[in-house]
Length: 118
Length: 111
Image (cartoon, rainbow over all chains, first blue to last red; front, side, top):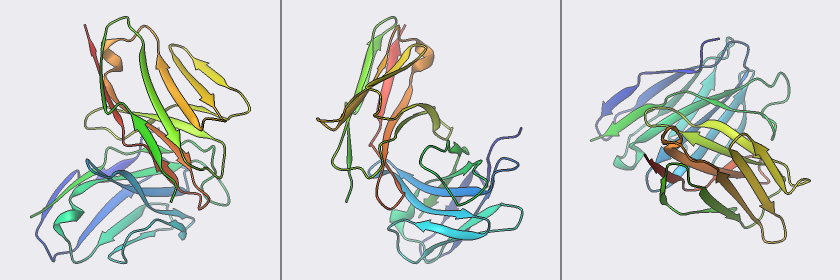
C-alpha cells in the first residue's frame, strides 16, 4: 500500500497570503489528523477529520482550517499567513473504521509540507 | 494544560551502547503512551507503545518502562546502532483526545 502523501513538499509564501496543503491518506483510512511541527514548539495537534467531519480541534486560531472529502483526502488552509506559521505541517492517517481516532490507533504520518513564510 | 517533559534534548551514544530517553507527564486522561521515531525528511513513525497495566514492554532492542506513581516513562535502546540515529518523541493523550508530544530527543549513534 502506498503511504500517506502530502503535496506540495515545499512552499514559500509571503505574509498575508493564504495557503492550501493537501493530504492523501493510506487507502482505506478514514481518519486524518494534521499537526504543526516547529523547532520551538515541537508537534502540536491542529485537527482531526473522520468521514468528512471535524472530530477534534487543537488550540490554533481560526486562520487554520481544514476539510475532508468523500474519498478521505484532506486539505488544510491557512489564511493571512504570519511569519510564525513557518513550520513543517504533517498529516497522519489512521485505519479506524468508525467513531474517529481512538487512543490505541496507530497514526501513519506523511513526510510533511515545509512551509516558509517570508 | 497537559505537558510532557522529555529529556535529554540530544544524546550521543557509542555503537553498542544503551540509549535512554526519559519522559514525565503531569496528568493524563488515558493510560496509553506511544513513542515515535522520526528520520530527517520523514514524518514520525510509531516505534512502540505501552499501556500501564504492565510496567515494561520490550520489542527487539527497544524497551519502554513505566512508573505510574512517578508519572514517568522511558525508552531504552539496547545495543544502539548507527541506524537508530533519529529524533525520538514520547507522547501522552489528554482529556480532549489530543496527543500531547514531548519536545523530542535527537539521538546520534557514533560508529
